[in-house]
Amino acid sequence: MALKFNSAFIQDEEHRPKPHISEAGGIPVIDLSPLVALTRDDDDRIERSKEALAGLVAEVGAACKAWGFFQIVNHGVPPELLDRLLAVAREFFALPLEEKRRVRRGEENPLGYYDTEHTKNVRDWKEVFDFASKEPTKIPATADPGEEKVDLFWNQWPDYPPEFRKACEEYAKGMEKFAHQLLELISLSLGLPAKRLSGFFKENMSFLRLNHYPECPEPRLALGVGRHKDGGALTILAQDDVGGLDVKRKSDGEWVRVKPIPNSYIINVGDIVQVWSNDAYESVEHRVSVNSARDRFSVPFFFNPPHHTNVRPLKELTGEGRPARYEEYNWGQFFKARKNSNFKKLVVENVQISHFKKTLLAN
Ligand code: OGA
Ligand code: NI
Image 1 (cartoon, rainbow, N blue to C red):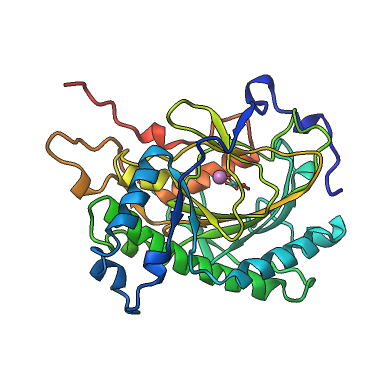
Image 2: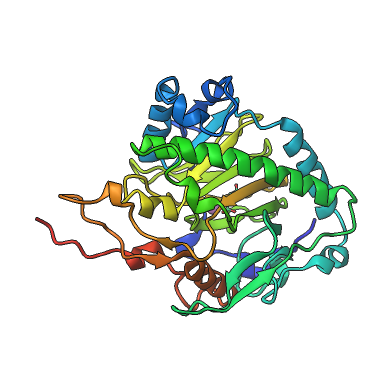
């Protein structure tokens, strides 16, 4: 086992894993075949086929509104990409700790491996490997407004397994393409042109994370990831057949376990989409439960715009009777502030988009 359980992993009373409802009334499952079946292969195919895709777009919109989460089947992403990635991830995490720590992530470089047993103040029962989809990835040097200095980071690749880097890079390419398609569907579902949001992602600072959640001797006291919302635009998650992702159901606040469906992806909208949509779509809380029987692998792709992006409600979605609910904020600084508080965890509250919420007068 990769991690040794100690009291640092014990969640305090308020954050202990709360019971979940297994698969009941689960997140919507959406079949992407109408899009995959489009015969046109040009860049404008989604916009130009929007009548044919109207049913699909309506499903995406309803899922974003009601849950903030959905599962996609018949997605068109070649399954070998994930198979190869999970195979190298399994080999990598099985290496001795000293070996994995050669590509260790730290305060100086946020990309690479870390295990939480050796990371102060992090309670998550997991080990991870982070890499950026595009290099170098650019992050503001500090979270101070007006900071002009930007740090550049490169991925750190392990020597073993030898196919590790290629599997990661090919998977990342597949995810970028998939993310752009999902973004167009989401844009249409908001009543906007398909490409309305695409320009924000010409460059991007998207990340991928290989998550390994070892079997946990005390699954009632610990979590793989504590409850949180994703700060970026969209997250595309692949998971194996073990299960453990719990989503907070908007209708009643119950925790619902997402049922693993073979060859599917789980999509959730993040804080940036919440702000762009002026609260039409909300970024929903989720967490990862662990178990004592089987270890689990998952791979989120965090689709993020570049650091210099200023985020505010889209003008088409605000106006007469629909005031903007958020002040503009800078995404790179938001991200940096989150990272800082992750390292100093629990002392300062994580920055949240609610901090940019305007006080709207009821009228
Ligand atoms: C995350 C996350 C879910 C999972 O890393 O942000 O929510 O199932 N992961 O691993
Ligand atoms: Ni998450």
